[in-house]
Length: 267
Image 1: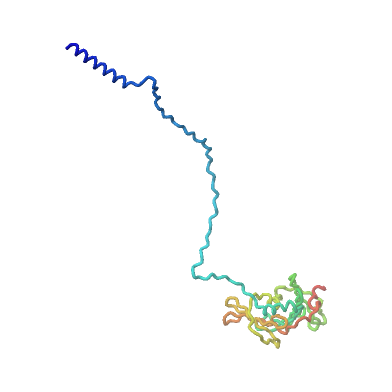
Image 2: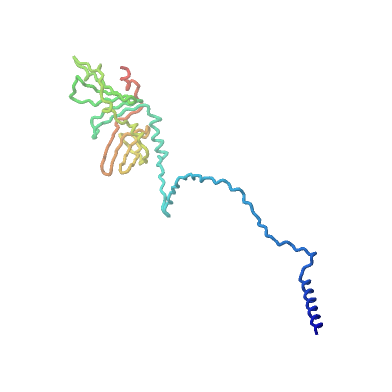
């Protein structure tokens, strides 16, 4: 019995040793080192220097034109133009007239008219003769220099300017330029900016063309000489009221000589 017990213990030890050898790894097999996770360092590019903010230039405000309302016409003023026929008539004075004379009254009733002689820059005014008159300070003719705005007066009618003791023909009188300077027919002609032809009419047995100029409620009717284009009559009205009537009577053209209007320059 004792031998069997000892034999059993030996068997147990032998079995135990065999299992231990199976569990242990052979010495020839080297164990791999444990895996160590390496950290990858990603280098960032060097930072650029930070620039200070630049001021942004201000743009001028944009003013928008509001569109025209729908279905509303946009009115564009078109300058009025003279008709070719009227333009040709108005140019006749520049083409044909070298000098002219006429009767013209400074009064509204056209009484006591003066005689006007016009050539170049000079105008002679033969005054309407009145009675009675003061022989000591009497003059009957005024000479105007329109360029230099000067006026001189003379007494030229020997029957009225000379007596036994007085000779006024040798005197020169300084008179007011503005008192005797009036707008001439030619200057009235150049004031016309736009007009329309009304039709032909006869004025003082002369053929004329009547034209009409309208400015607001003021209407100006002008009768132009058909041959020379110079005004012979002007009438200005406002509604039913006649504001002014100018009549250039007995008008003749191109008959004057230089000495008829230049006496002042010879003194």
